[in-house]
Amino acid sequence: MLTEPTTAATTDDVPAFGAELDRYEFTPDEIVVHEAPRSATIGAVIPAYNEAATIRSVLKGLLRQTRLPDVIHVVVNNTTDKTFAKASKLAGEHTVERKGRRQTTRVYVHDLGALADKKVGALNYGFRLVRGADYLLGVDGDTVLAKDAVERLEAEMDSDPRIGGISAIYTVDATATRGPLRRFLLTGQRAQFAAFNMQNLLRGRNMAVLGGQASLFRTTALEDVMAAHHQRNPWVSDSEVEDSLLSLQIKSLGYSTKISATARAVVGGMTTLRALDGQQVKWNYGAIDLMWPGQRGDTRGQPFHPNLRLRWMENVGMLVNAATRLLFGLLLAGALSISAFEFSPIWLLPPVVAVALNVRIALSMKDRTWRDVLFAATLVPAETYMWIRVGHFVRAWSKFLSQSRTDNWAAQAKAERGSGWAYLSPLLVGAVALAAVAWMWTTLPLAAQSTALTIGWPVLGVVTVLQTLFMLRRLVRRQHGLRA
Image (tube, rainbow, N blue to C red):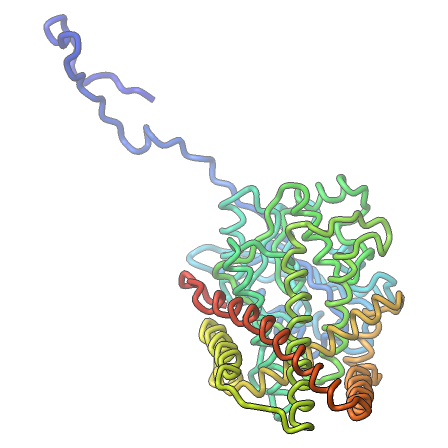
């Protein structure tokens, strides 16, 4: 709005042509057009399957938020424990004072009994309950949010209408855990999550997977996905990894999928080899299913979709990691068997670089512990955990290539209950394969053994050099103060 000059202008006051004109002075209120204040609404949905041990902590974490969700729906499904009873104790209206402002939310607890679509069905049921809200906050039944996580997620979402969904930074809870195996597995998962988080943070905070652990979705983006793909619900059972498929669909419609720079959440980890195998095989199988599209339902083929690039990198990286280590072990054993091994200090460089990279990732963790740093710095624990992951990788690819149509959700649930021995199959197959290779080696003539070593070592050397250069690139890359 222009203001009138303070004094009336006369012909004598008019400057000559070309002379500098006096500038009007404006107040900030006259210059800036303020947007009408608007408060977005957030509906939280917690799909809960046998979460009796954690559901109260999850709900209390939401009720401690500096920005309360406007409504919280706990959707219990296929549960055989006391999840419903424990969640029900916190049902009802809750009013708190936060930053001088009175906030109110209401907790509802729904028990859907046996649900064929399991978590997918629970999420879709929750979506229908909060469909009128601006944002849907999905939180797993074992995920505790930092007290300002919702406020930070909302602020980032409000800052850019192009964001269709934004995920918190996850870490695995390793506190109050007893037993060396449990501590080892949880520390390994913390390192795995930290590496994944940092990769996404350094890729412009573009998140390949809006994980179900704690993600805020724009409901209009979910509606657009349903319309574009002719779906009744945002989440579909066409994929083993429903969150990856939804993230891919959101990205395909022109929205961005982001990881928060500051909002954090602590998730429950897997404390047994069996349970970890069930979870990781399901994740890996689902990722492969998306990379080789058209395997389930009517999922459209998008193998080069931006959200799948990181998946390709993970699988190629795992293949190279397993191949180089296995080839090195075989060549070393073969060389020792005919007294042809000569040690070269240059072979120490790759493990040194690997340790340095692992330590850097550990130091980038916001709430790191001494175990995280020790795990990375001593090489053996990280290498052991990597081989465990190789087993998951092999199992997932084997199931996919054999066109096995097992219910991986049920397999994970079974593993978490302590049933099944499939997680040992890579170890048994590997032992048999190594025994067969050893027998074949002993049957070869000395000339053939020498030829194999003469070809094998240079090939391994070239691949290892390239792998080391890739690790060096990640090691020296600036992290811009970001914390995993």
